[in-house]
Image (cartoon, rainbow over all chains, first blue to last red; front, side, top):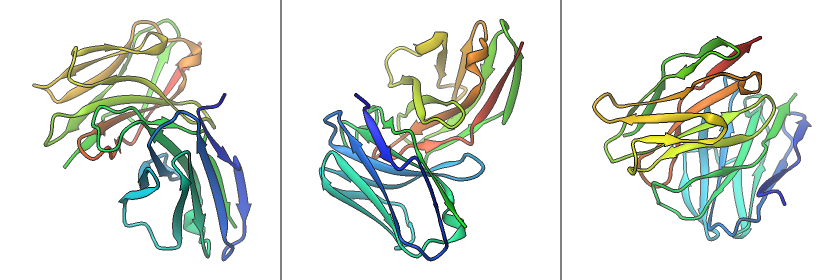
Length: 115
Length: 112
């Protein structure tokens, strides 16, 4: 009965490879997000989708491409992986888009290591 | 523009003593403020949130925070620390467009 789930939990890969991280939420929320947490634990939003439509894109390199097949899923595909992409990636969801009071619920994170 | 400053990167307390984690915010709008906790190698869990109702907000596990507009602060407190409280704590502001702005985190250590 996990609310926001991500797969895989750990991902180790070589530079230059392409990889995907999947996220699913069973909360019935309309909005989903991807965040990146760097080695200093700093968290920053990357993307947000509302009902399969992109609403936030925080100047992330275009090697990163989010895809939302339906409002319960938001996947993150990364092309040509670089060392600097090593981080923990968190998926989150919330009920509403643009609602300041809305709570975001986070997944357990995916630790990506690029060698 | 919104921003959050967590004044201490590390806080160490003894078990059973009070906890104070400090947070100051800046927002052009009437903000919503949150505290999230991250235990080692775990995801983020919501502790509590302020959304312009009562200024003293109670959260899970005995934590509470007080919104002070005059001081632009939203400090997190707990009367008595427990070993299981050891974790990273993030103060977060949501000023507009549901874009959360995270502080840099405070690592809380609890000594036996």
